Image (tube, rainbow, N blue to C red; front, side):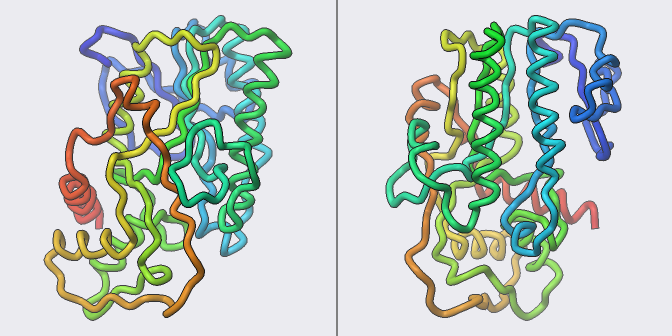
Length: 295
């Protein structure tokens, strides 16, 4: 971004582990508070909305409260800001959890067809609602801002959350494998298939979208890699990179037919976008090395 001689402003709320650069201005900011937007006096051309609070499956299972109210306010405040400042483009990172169960690859048009899968029921409905707010707001206020909604599959990489209670699968496995000497316990039988997107690949894709001209008022794009891996395959890859020979224990012997939730990335590829510039083995090693440097 800096090479393109564009001025960049980043916001932070609680986390302060961000890229340090004298040419980037940072603002302490809570997008759920309307008055916070008074801190931004300039007129941005593009906004990338990443400030929603994450609520993943493991957090749902331990009944940790989800901050639904602040996520809702955050979305409304940003849309109001786009209208007031006449922002040209808003890129919003949504979630693939809103998709219904399917044995086939899921296209963008299928998001609201049926109920979200039972495992991600609450998260899925909230993801859908936040997207619906965009459509409703744009219709009511005739918002001129071009909006790009991204629905990524499972994201992982450096700077990830490695907390046992709230981490996603890959950081969870990395932490367990490094800390255990004799075994690693994986969720289910290990046959659950997911598509994994590295955060650096995803970031580069977002940067391309910032400069990419869009003809649609609202554009929705699935973001996924071309290759899918099961939990067992990912576990074996991590073990190989860490060079550990320990036993893999499955949580239970039998399970129902699993929902793979694999996204159709045809539209993404037609736009000449990719998250497959480097291999998953390369990115897993980078993630593991980063985590080791922090413990």
